[in-house]
Length: 538
Image 1: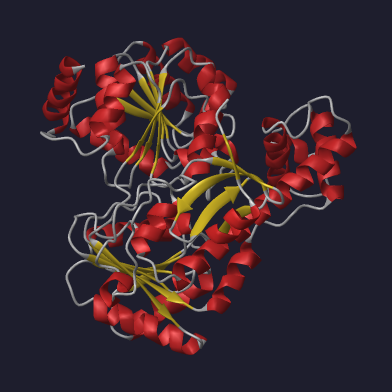
Image 2 (image 1 turned 45 degrees about the horizontal axis):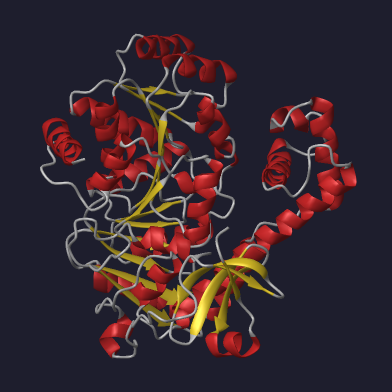
C-alpha cells in the first residue's frame, strides 16, 4: 500500500501539478486501487474530480464520468485536456456524426475520459457501445441525485446502479458535496457499491462565520437584507443573495441595482442565454452580486465569494449547507447570514412535493402497462395529462418497487396504495426538513456543530466564529463515551418505526425515521419511557 500511495502522489504531481493531496483524496484513490468502490462526500472545490482522474490513470483503460449538466461536463473535458489528457463529451448537444466519432475514439483507446449525462447512459445503444469499451472506472458526480432521501433526487439517476452493472465490473466512485447519513446509505444501495469505502471530508467550514438574524416583519427583513449586502460588499470579491422564489430574486436584483451595485438576477425562468450570461459575468467578476434561486448552484466554483445571504429560509439544511459552502473556497474568511422570519417556513410546506391523487396514479400505472414502458413520453400518450406529471408518478412507482413496497405481480389497487403511501412519506420527509431549518435558526448551539450533526459528521468542538459562539451562548460540544445512542445507530420507535440516529446532544437526540422524517426527541423522555430500542446488526 505504501508503494501505491507513492504512485498516487507521483501521478497527481506529474499530470495535475498537485504536490500534496487534500484530506480524503488519497484515501479514496487507494480504496479504488484496492478494488473497493468509494462514496466520497466532500464540498465542491475540495478536489473530488482529482480522485477519479488520478484513479482513472492508475487503473488504465477508459474512465466513464456520469455528470448531470452539459456545462459541468465541458468544464471537466477542458480541465483534462489542459492537463494533456484525452477527454470527450457524449451529449445531446453533439451531432450524430460527432457522437459516433467520440464512441469510435473511445473504442480505439484514444479517449481516456468519457463524460456523459445519465439519460445518455440509459440509451440502450449508447449503453451497449460503452459496455464494449469495458471501462475500468465509473465516476458518478452529484451522486445524491440517485437517492430518494436526497434533497435533489433526479429520476434519470434512478436506474444508474443497474446500468453501471451492465458495463462489466468497473470500479465505481460516487461523489457528492452533501449527503446526510440516510442519503449516504441509499447511494450505496442504489448504485450497488461493492465493499464500499465511505470517505467524508471537509464538512467543517471554519472560515465561514455563520449567523442568523431574526425578524417579525417582512419589510424590516427585506430592508435588512439589502443593508447586509451593503455592509458585506465593501470587500473585494463576490456575493450571492439566495431567495426562495423567482419574483424574490428579480426584486432583490432590481433593488441592488437601484442602490448602485452591479447585480443581476438568476433563476430557472430566465432564457438559457441570459442564465449563461449572468453565470459568465459573475465568474469573471463583471457582475459581483447575484440574487438567485437555488437554480444558481451546480458549476458555481468561484474562490472569492465573500458572503452568502439567505433572504428566505431554504427548504432544508441540505440545501442551506450546499449554498453556504459556495463562500470562502479560497479559505479566506467569509460570512453566511440567514434572514429568518418564522412565517417563511410556510413556504417550505407550500413547496413540498404534492401527493398525487389515487385516480391519477391508477391512470399512470394502467398507461405504463398499455405502453409496456416507463418512458414518460410514451406513457403520456395514453393519458389525459402531460409527460412531466406522468414522469413524477412513474418515478414514484419505480421507487415503490425498488423499495419492495409492492411486488411486480401486485394487483392495481395494491400498486396505487403503495405509491400514494410512498408519496406521503416523501412529503413528510420534506416537511420535517423544513422543521430542521427552524431548529437551526432558533438554536443556541454552535451553528456549525448543528449542521455537522445533521450530516452525521463528527462534532469535536465549537467553531468559535458563528454568532452563538461569539456571543457566548453556545454550550460545549462534549461527547459522552457512555451515551446509550450513537450516530448511525439504527433504532426502533413504537410510533415512528425504524430510523437512523443522525445527531446526539447532551439532552436530545435527532433521528431520521423512514416513515415520518426527522424527529428531535428529549433524551430524558426517551429514557424514562423506553421509546428507542437500538437494533443491533445481524
